[in-house]
Amino acid sequence: MTSLDDVRALDAGNMLRLVSELPAQLRAGWRNAATAEFPPEYRYAQRILILGMGGSAIGGDLLRGLITSRCPVPIVVNRDYGIPAWASDALGGTLVIASSHSGNTEETLTALAAARSAGAFLVALTTGGELAARAQAWGVPLVLYQYDSPPRGALGYSFSSLLAVLSRLGFILDPQTELEEAAATLEKMHPDLAEERPLSSNLAKQLAARLVGRMPVIIGSGVLATVARRWKCQFNENSKTWAIWEELPEADHNLIVGTSLPAGGLKQLTALFLAEPEEDTRVALRRQATADILAEAGIACETVTAQGQSLLARMFSLIFLGDYVSWYLALAQDVDPTPVEPITRLKALLAAAG
Image (cartoon, rainbow, N blue to C red; front, side, top):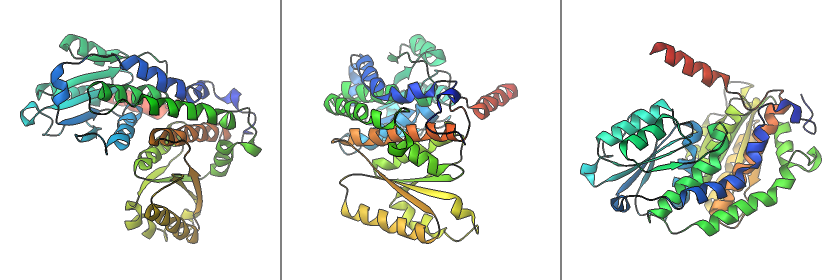
């Protein structure tokens, strides 16, 4: 195990830079997309469908969780080759936003073509690739940004660009004040999480050290369930470790029953509970009761609490922490966090199959 106070040499792909730039990404993505122009009929869409996979889709999940209580139309994130039957012009108009960092995600491109055939209102969000080429050829509004990163490292761009598009179209009130508070909250957190901060006073390093050789189960409620999903994906891709995410209160109707078998296996798990500083009383009671039941079964439990005033800031404070934890865990286990060789291999196998 590498010392968490001496890790930079293992980060050949410089994932640390991408993690630390999240607040700057939030601001830059917003500025880049906030002046985009769209046809006037887009404002009258009755549904919003966000197309994406992996790191290009999680921004849509976070957006949906953030604004679902204030957006007048439903938002669905679509991770597939196809689209729902309701995503057609005949049913009152669907706004379809294709989000692909590379612009070459085959599922997203296929779904976008289906949405075009269905007569949906289309928007493309990307750094380039085939998605940008198709958007330009089809006359589709294109939100183009540039950031040298794997998709998971550009979450600030993908999320704030989506936020800007929906604000521009009038589906939500201008959230720029909340976005700025979120970025400022992350900047305030940064010194306490940075590599210069020693293990003795660095929460991200401490969590990573306790997760070495273990499987994380990340549990959140409400919008923090989507943040839990982000933690899970970052553990998979950065730390190269298996991880699970769960949602409360749903987990209390199934997860807590699976605490008997396999014998001994549960002792390799760590349940990470994501919490709000001020949350619904019933949610807090469920979280504590769930942790008690899991602990009785021999599962280690940790609780981490969000920071910030706005929901947006609290979401991203936990995302920022989780990104750092996944980075430290990768290096503690002597792996470079950037390469994703199994994904590269899978793409090669699919390409060879035609």
